[in-house]
Amino acid sequence: MTAPIPVPAPPHPDPYRDPVALAMVDLAVEEGYEGVSVEALLERAGVTREEFERRYADKEDCAMRVFDAFCIDFERMLGIAYNRHSNWRDGLRAAARATAAWMLENPNLVRFGTVEVLAMNTEMARVRREEVFVYSANLIEGGRREAADPSSVPEGAGIVAAGSIGHLLTHRMQKGDAIDPYGIIPEMMYAVVRQYLGEEIAREELDIPPTEPAQGT
Amino acid sequence: MSKPEQGAGSEPEGLQRLPPGRHGLSRDFVAQNQRDRLAAGIIACVAERGYHETTITQIAEASGVSRRTFYGYFSSKEECFFAAYQLMGDHLAEALEEAADGEKRWPAKVRSQLGALLETFAANPNLVRFGLMAPPAAGGEFAERYRALLERLVAIVSEGHPSTRDSDRAEAAAMATAGGLAALLVSKVRAGEGEALPDLLPELMELLLTPYVGRKRAVAEARR
Image (cartoon, rainbow over all chains, first blue to last red; front, side):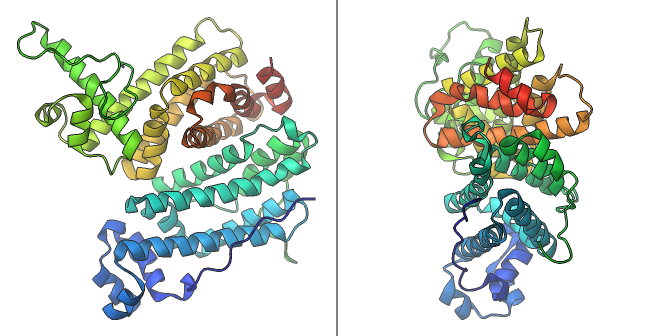
């Protein structure tokens, strides 16, 4: 039985209801982060400069806090989906499906968080990305508890798995290739499960449909 | 490529500054010496500060050359970075090719090559910071060069792998695994454990061999 993963508290304000947050994401994807101006943000969000300056010091402050809010939301989504299951494989698969749904519903957000935010060039953005990476790696590492011989699983297996998935997705996104986030789930699950539970169990993942069953996860 | 320096601002190890004034050295020798120093200089600066925070003045100072000399070779910081990145890639590829010499069994070849890679990085963790940490964080063309480097190194290590019924899947898995292995090396260097990278050899062998030979055999080979 797998242990639940800590889930962060919801971000405040809710970025999906914040017109400035949504405007920052959309404009960064349309123009590139460097091309976003505060004036354009105000116009797109429909807020005054006074309202903007009441909450944000400048464009970079706004982008960083928007990015942070969406990182929290992403971690919550992963953790909540994962914790619904007492079995690690089912939890991991649920988290993968939740991620796939989220990616399809929020393509601009995905691009903002993986590509455009790189242009911010700040240590805070790098650290925040690293934290999301570590959260994902810890979730994957839950498999060690269910391994027949936990000590035989390579020490860095969780980091390597999270790094592999991140590399695959970022590579395709930066190239502008289409991604089928549901389509890659069986292969991803196979590669990850193989490290913790062995080849035979991992092969089962290749036959499990990537989308959620009609009655729920 | 000459051995890069350990820290920005210090004299690059093995790269002596040219004597001032007339020295009778050939123009080609001078040019190569200065290019090597610039490569070492930008590696040290980017490793310490990151690409965007590094300036041409800092690169020139770390390289022991003037800004004027810098601009004699490169028109921009970016051009200097890509030249140094190519040199580093060539250096790593050469190390892998040499390590494979004489190895007949593929797993033994992988062991020698991964071992050489880890020893190279352990001797100078700045290569991890410059080559594996900075480019993905910079995005754009930098991230593209990073991916090309990983593909190049994976191709060299994978060469001679046993054919499997899932060869396409194995190759795709090996490429994705390379990204994951890079993440592991980065995490170790960030934690100040760069000198201990060679200790990762069995683990890296297991992860890289598994897509081709299966986990059971990969574990056995890694523990030989």
